[in-house]
Length: 227
Image (cartoon, rainbow, N blue to C red; front, side):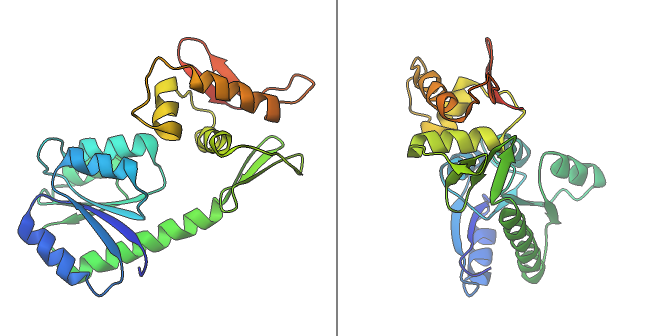
């Protein structure tokens, strides 16, 4: 786990202290949020290898937080902590997008073991998905390069971020607001046409001259990247 980044969303100070002390020698970077909304904001703003999430949280509960995270990020590992140990609650947690579930009270050793397993699994999945392709277009996430029919495609940094987001969500309709929040920033004026402008830039670089399109407009909704 050394070098991993973990977000702990937990509102019980004593438990937070125990977890922080117990993980102090693991060599991981831990960020803490004491409520659901703050945790969600941090999950959207920063990249984490693992999110450890309590269900019973103030402002926004863990189930809601997990569902919102999964709308934007299907890759980060999520471990839920809860005092609600019934089968129904466990199923609800897993169906909301959690990868694993740990019932309180638990031994610190078990928490560490589950964290290691999830981080290791997440790292393997990330390695497998370093390349994403559709039709004759491929991006290499590690090197941030793009090829079409094996030939390099020169993109600006913003064009690359937009294409990567579209590719990671291919076959899904994405609204302009979703694209603004994920490629630019949530602070953008929603009346801007910057999304449409950059979609046009991308189309000129990745669409086939014979009329084959990858980026399609869904009128009244947004855009979708598909074959």
